[in-house]
Image 1 (cartoon, rainbow, N blue to C red):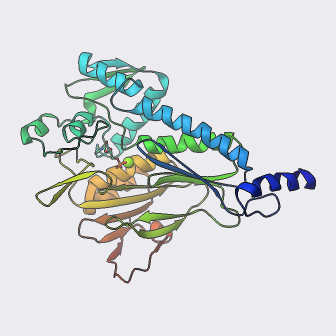
Image 2: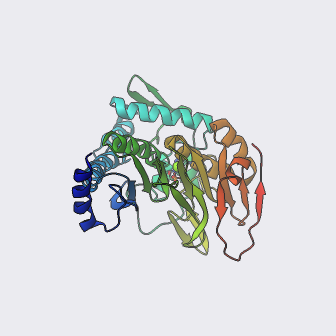
Image 3: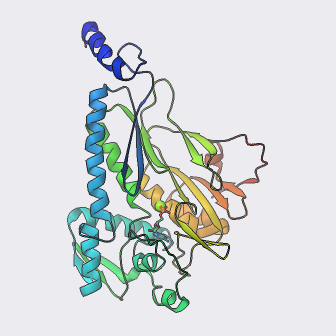
Length: 346
Ligand code: AMP
Ligand code: MG
């Protein structure tokens, strides 16, 4: 770009943003829109304003479409598949959904079934599905028991899903945001954005840098509105958190949250949050859910089986456990509160 073009373009941008250095904005440009059941924030560095806005508009329509296609109810691809499974115990699905479910089933197997995309009916029974009820009740024990099974009750062959027992319904709530993050980053790169970070309600993936420094992200404190720890993101890394604060109801002083243990049918009891860092955001998403369910004793085995090396685990008693690689990456916030932290090897 000639110095003159650069100067003219800078003039156009300064009217909107204010700070600039040469032809590059010094501060990231930030955008927000609702999608995937949460508020999506996108920060972009080093792209002209118009390129950034156009890419974000494209991203918004992609995520709106994915949200519709991957909802467990309604007339999107997954909603239609669930209706067919309920009516005929089989469903023919398109290539995109087929690949998505195949990957999810493989991750489920690696997690020992703790991440289980076929739990949809149980999730609905608890009122944590897309239809999100307001008046929650604890479901009847027998009704819960009737829905317990294993992932082998679902098979997928050449775009045909087959349920081998009744009550199999697919819910990708623990996984879809991770896949969407991967696709979001692909889209932004293809649109010519050199550096960006996409944050979907605390699950995020970045690439490049924010100018002369890496992207910095905060891990939410699971029991107050502040930040528990900060992480500097490496190129292409994603940080994904599963927390009991995301969706829950309270009855008689007890919290019932949305992450269910497929072995008992009840909310996983001993965890309040799990954060993982991994390049593959989809694997990170499935893993954070699985480690949450695994609990304070057995999460390291499950992390190992899933190839996850960076884990920050917060137990229901407030104790923090971390892997060594994670301990080298996190900086805890100074709150004056003494933290009980243990480092564990996988
Ligand atoms: P996440 O925040 O990624 O842990 O996802 C939680 C969501 O995944 C819930 O709202 C449910 O829709 C779904 N879910 C709950 N428990 C499980 C589980 N054990 N395996 C797979 N999906 C689950
Ligand atoms: Mg998840």
